[in-house]
View 1 (cartoon, chains in turn green, cyan):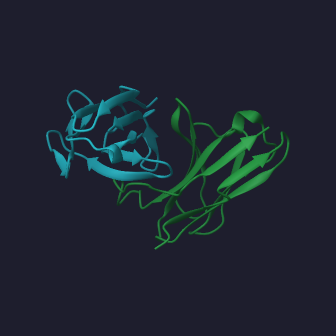
View 2: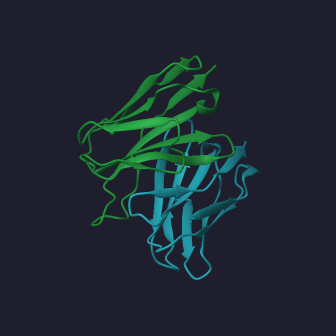
View 3: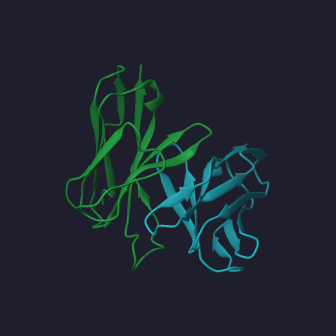
Length: 116
Length: 111
């Protein structure tokens, strides 16, 4: 019963490098999310995907792109990493939607990214 | 803009103490409020509240919602060191699909 799986767990990048964070869920959830967590800032939504084939910007989308590859997978790409993107990134999924708007989010274990 | 404010931001107590964590919110079209506990890794779901005055309980943890005054509290009685964590409050915003989180309360329980 894996739930939400994120890879990698840790990553160090140099300024200007690119990388993709991978996320997969096995709960057949419609919605998937990418959050970043910074000290004193709480969890902030980067992008979300309400259903397969759709993506929307969250609170802090600049510098990121996403792809909802299929119902299970939702990736986050940093095209040109900046030190301001040093953070812990969490992927989450839920059944949240019109019929189940109260469904809670299930989180992955996070990716700790450092950009030097 | 949706807003969720938690207080205090941090709290240090001794084992056995009772703590109350606060969450106030301003959102359009309120549907529910959720509490999460975050230890070292992923936040884990604790409670969801949808109706005023309904108290949710799980062991030593309980939570109540006041929709008129737009806040919720999370109580932990007889705290243990294992309760040390960040406690996050979240509400769905204008869209069904998005959750807005507060900054969290860092609770430290000392032996």
